[in-house]
Structures are given as structure tokens and as C-alpha cells.
Image (cartoon, rainbow over all chains, first blue to last red; front, side, top):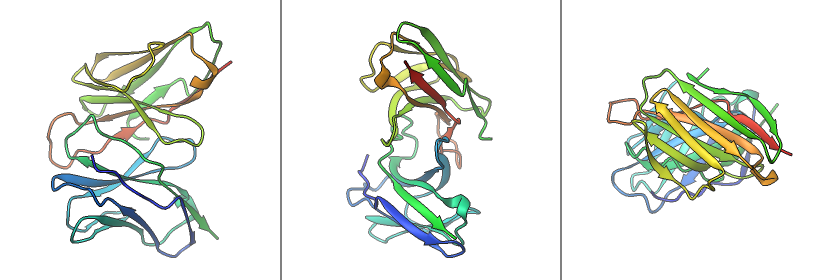
Length: 111
Length: 116
């Protein structure tokens, strides 16, 4: 699976949009981009995933560049409860052996 | 509540003890995973089971012994652990066969293990 690179930490003001970037320049054509988050000492929570089109659900939006070498997770109105470590993972869709997590981005939402 | 339940939530054990961690899911998933998360480190994939068969063992020491009696239950048997094995142990499950719109992994809340 392709490796991902994320900033170590980011700050965001409460109520503003949080934009979390991820670089995956070695992604192959049949690999998907997944996002998870982990609130302190809890199990990771699935957020969203996509292949090449932008995706939106009730939690977030995922913007994937046309060359698929990077993506951005957008939390439209960040709240204090969104403070967490956000992980960007690239994997084959049904490759159940390959859910590998990197270091992620610690998002600090501040009042 | 994710549908994946881990017990116990906290465990303190001595280095000579034998204990087991339990994971249960009723999501109809066929793949189950054990992860280890040490302090300030990324999650480390330990074991993967698909349809009760172990399909991945990431060079985990033999003092950790997984067991998957059926697709809904996963155990991690622990014996003669070391203090450096203290960590958060997470279980996850996902669909093990292609099924549209159902590919993400669901995680339990984890077991916080302390080896003394």
C-alpha cells in the first residue's frame, strides 16, 4: 500500500472549517483513501473514504486532487469534540490484511 | 457504540500471569484484527483473521496467542508478558468479502493493559 504523509499537528478555531492535508504521491490506481480519527485513548472511528471523486457525508468532506497524489479532509464546522488524531490511510478496497496506520495529524480545536 | 465490544476495558497483570482479552462483534463481519498501541506510537497491526483463518501475523512474539473460534469472537491470550507490552490493545472488524458500501473497519474501545 502507498505510504502517506501528514502534518504532525494543526490548530483550528471552534466553528471554523478544519482542513487536514495528506500526501500519498505513490498511490496506485486501485487504492482508496480512507480517513479515521482517534479521540484520546478510544478506538479509531471511520470518517470517510474515496477513490478519485470528492466525497461528502454527515461528518466530513474528502477532496482528492485530480492526480490523486494528495487529499484533504474537511470538517466544515469544527467543534471541541473534533479534537483528535486524524489518520489518512491508503489501501486496496478489499485488502483486509492492510489497514496500516501512520502517525496521523493531531487536530486541536480551540475555543 | 461501534458494534465491537472488548473486555475487559482495563487489565493489570504480573509478568508470570496468564490472561485473555476478548473481542466480540455482531456486525456480520468476517474479518477481525488485533492492534497494539503503545504510548505516543502509531497503531501496530498484530494479527488478522478472515473467515476464522489467520491471514496475517506481523512478527508478533509468541507470548501473544490469538484465537478465533468463530467470525464473531476473537481472543488474545497473554502469558509471560514484559512491562514493555503495556499498551492499549484494540480489536477491529470489517467485511472480509466484497460488499458494496461496507468496507470500513469498526474498532472496539480497547483494553488498557498494564504489565507489572
